[in-house]
Image 1: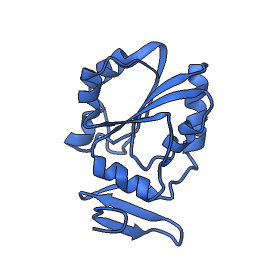
Image 2: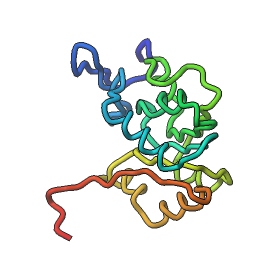
Image 3: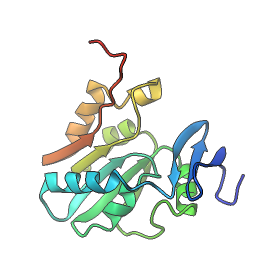
Length: 171
């Protein structure tokens, strides 16, 4: 238990940044590194070409995209899927996410389960939660998951994700 909530490890990675580990996994750094997030946000928003955008984020609660999209005039709603309420509270206590934003809606639980139950449609779905190096991470890289994403996209909607590479892949 810390002043920020229940945290496994809060480790200094530089004089200004700390790495947050929760339940044995690296969740992010505070303050978040915006070096890649700003171009990714600009690219993602330009792909939709619209106003009053509705976004589904499946990402770490420490991802700076949350704050960037909360501040974007073209964004009207952000649904953030967070697996654990405690983790979101830690990120808020560490000022990694905006404390007040009428745009940000939290959806607790598994992203796939949320998409199966929800009827919400989005202009932009961003999936940056994990790499397919574990059973937990692999669930975001299946045909079933991409079908769920397709069902949540509006006509002309955009999916932004990444496919990590590996030197050991020979297929």
